[in-house]
Length: 123
View 1 (cartoon, helix red, strand yellow):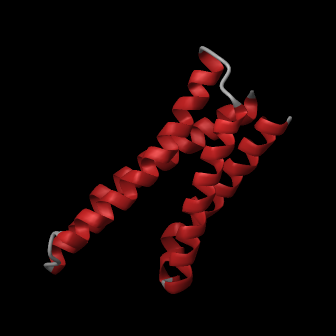
View 2 (spheres, one colour):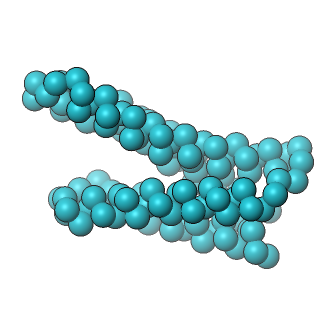
């Protein structure tokens, strides 16, 4: 049960963090630079979709712990989605290495989250 609580807290931190950071920093920078609305809109879509995956994982775990047992295959699917998001961001960081200074926390937290999720599923 403890690994699932760790995963839930991690997912909530990442979900709210992505939304908060996406609202505050890049949008302000894009507005100040005069970039047209297509770029900020697509940027927001990416950040919010990733946040939804984290929120869905946290919600499913809360449902699993509080109400009913959920099929572990669903956790595996969400784990693969989160891993895919992590790989995508890792690829972005390879092209834009200056982003590492703001990405180090989530790049470390996501593997920690996935390890706890895998441990909870297969224990």
